[in-house]
Image 1 (cartoon, rainbow, N blue to C red):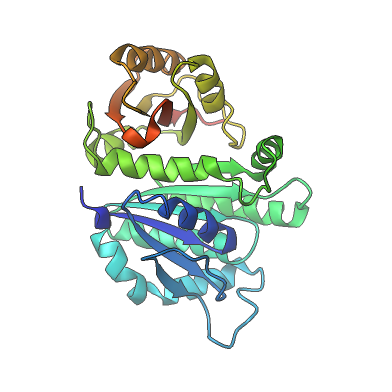
Image 2: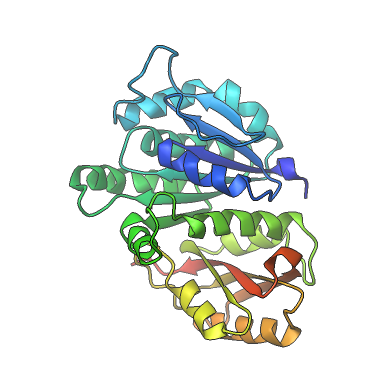
Length: 302
């Protein structure tokens, strides 16, 4: 799979920060950033599209319909990126104007071009009732146009960042690991290869879907399981999932026995007849570390 066939798209202020940081790791995918003002994070080789007019300093004024309208009007500018893309990963913070209104419209455009769409939507804090209400009203539209929609809880993310002594908006290793890990999974050769057809086979299962990612020491697998299970996601019971795509990546010291043990432990909660597709690869830069990226689908609706 070519790097141009994976398009990582950040939409809105927070939505642009995290993909830009993941892009700096060099996973190889293309990066597109969309926002309504000029405060884009630095990211070498990134493509930038501004939603709005040069003299408009107010962004989308916390109005999702305005952002949606502007995004629809930019369809001719997004077309060149979407025509090449086979997989589009969208990252957006919901509850404001740009991320909330433009994300589902961009997802709709991506689906029209035949891409598989994976969205990561950050949900507001409990202390932001107005933004939370806006996000809850719009999340279904993003889900409708996405093959997978991962709902990220900023409340949980901030709590975990504080535990590590980091400011929440910059303590986003979970999001970065997810984007970087998925990109490497599809773009790099491994011991057991995964490709876009495997991903598409898993996301076709009817029901809800989500993704998990965890990183830990290769000799402390229990801590690795805990890190994976305690992902900062919005509450969702993943037991009984009908589809599971599992990528296990580690340094030169990772053994086949560890891969088998991890796969057995993490797939124990899925449906007994679930479709499970396993991938594994060795990455020298993960020496002493194992990273898990897990896509679950066919999850029963609440």
